[in-house]
Image (cartoon, rainbow, N blue to C red):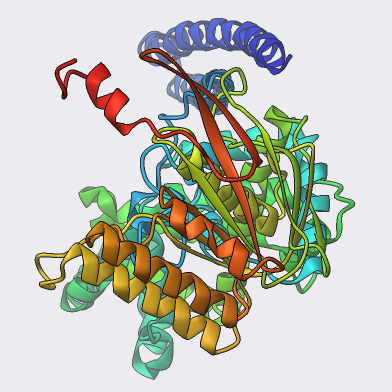
Length: 596
């Protein structure tokens, strides 16, 4: 259904694009004709009347300028439509679970994080890449923060759910926001440099000498120029004042260049932010979070988009120095560099305290828009219910990154804290995938996003996993030692009374089978005594016998397989009890590792 929606949208956009291209072609021709006419008019009419020739030429040049302005405006529209087409094309691919064109967030990978590394939250093929539609660095950072820092306030979660529901239906708002954002691909350093400039002390506005010079020098120089036009005797005074302004500019050239390199190179980014703020400011929102975000963009009866627009205007004026001839004239007449930096400093003094909050609003809206797109694409997924009693109740739970045509859903219930489920099963039967399914959906739930289930109730608890341990040559750590460090961290958290939902996959893999069996039992019993809650997947059938010792705390479930001769059949369905079938030897035979 959504495929058809996006295809129809692309069709309409291509029709608009064709119309714009025709308009641009016509403007290119008429612009050239107007320019040629201006030259011909000047040459031809000049023979009869100088005044008429100049007047006619000026009128045609004004017309030429207007055509250029219209061309630029239409070209911006063309670029915006191109971006919209690209966005909708990528969404079609995403519906087919091809999301490689979105940023993967590898910079957020942290192998020591309580769960993100184990659950593939960041990196290639990650949950972040699957969800990410952000077009600002602050939005990307905000989405990464939500995925790595669980929200434990149920009211905040339900408020996020409301805003995601509302934004999911605002397709034009979301896509226009995204299209404007991706036209300037900002980097980490862009925002870092802007923030450094904002927090840097002002210079010229604090110096009385520069205040006086910036006022008197241009006044005297322009006065001398006007006087020289009427009387040539003032030309020397004008030249002296002109050169003196250039001398002052050269003295401060290093500082001026540094400020321009920071702020001037971010003009396109500032224009992008102006437009993005405008999209938020101009919408009629209903949900609490979106209304709050919108209100945060107000300042003294003014809006963030207009204030950022003023900054972009100052920076654009400052950029005139890039033309050497224009820069010399402006600095010789008006002390241009210093004037522009003083205007920047005045702007900064007035608004610097508002900027971090505005950028945070932009990032939050951008991240919410990503989650809203996820819900729009998969409307059959449900918003979870955060509660205080049931730890986890999920019906038809599946991994959102597995194609729904291949995905096998399961039910899971953990009614009370201090309960543990032991899952046994053969190799490749689905144990690890199921643990990741639970973990990923819990993270989505705590972000306020919908989850891949038909029903999902959960208790707000921090998540901790031990599923993928790395050894370290640099730190001289063996695999087993790294695994022990991870378990030590878990036990310490439980000792400190931290409420955790725990996911463990085949713990103590780095030691021999007998040691592993004894150690796993000790670890599980310790977790139970410390009131831990969660799930452990294992091949160790002896560990599953722990249910006999803690019948009120431990339940056994398994992924069973069917073996018919040398054929193995997986149904990936979770059932009660302990597995009765293993398949390592048969799998090795099938792969040619063992000779049949």
